[in-house]
Image (cartoon, rainbow, N blue to C red):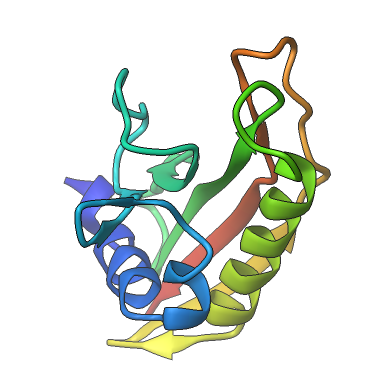
Length: 136
């Protein structure tokens, strides 16, 4: 139930923001943005975003307060030059798009986390963002 609270608004905002989508690879004409905990095993590219809930929703509060992570994948060492730079650029675009956004009664506050380098040439750079979603 709670995974749709806010995550759909995050996804909708990002998929409609050309400052974000132009930085991503596409699957045909669709930017690689996933509203899911796990990326597909076979993606059409390396520069992608996935959104998922990372915190619980307390039923004891008088307002909704949920934490999400937006992973900004910039490409791997093996397939993309500039994977680190790509990840940071995507991270900055997502932060600019979501931070302090008020949409449909939801208020978003973002945190930029340090980039996570790939362990080997088969993995991608990840520059995560924390998104705290509140609704009264």
